[in-house]
Amino acid sequence: MNQAEVTFALAIWGALTGTISLWLRFRQHRLDSSKLECKSDFGFESPGQERHKIIIRSVGRRPVTIDYVRYYIMPRTLKQKLTKSWQHKQGRLIWDQKLHTAIKLEEGEKTEISISLPDGFVIEEIYRADIADQSGRFWAINWPSLSKLSKVATEEELTKFVKENEN
Image 1 (cartoon, helix red, strand yellow):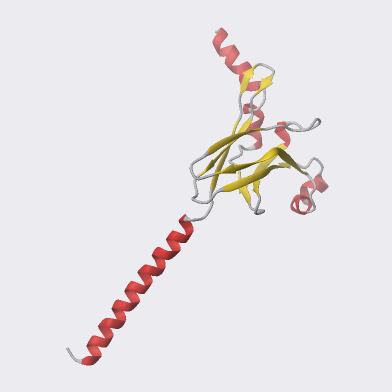
Image 2 (cartoon, helix red, strand yellow):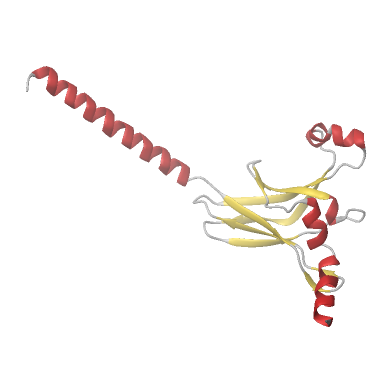
């Protein structure tokens, strides 16, 4: 082997090991970040007593502190529907459910937050919900579509089960 071949082989070896170490470093950086898995659960304890909640799991390696839950309300008029994204940016058609105390989730922990809406709002008007942490990041909640939500979150589903049990 002459000197040019040795230099070429060392250059290939250096590029290969450098690329692999860069990929491993990037992968480690992504794993060290915070991550939340959020889903909604709708149910009833009895006919008339709702048990709607949001289940939050911390699956990342960094702790996350949750400040509030943001609900996006479906616009009612055509004008509001056409300007929905602008309305949300202006702080309209949203409602923030403040928590009594901030919830800190470490790696692998889970918590549940009850969905509580103010008077005048019904659960069927909400088409999206997010969790906000202290850093200002919003985590999307797995929220059902409006048609599925109207069936699951209302007593319509309960009456269906009652009729099935009576037969």
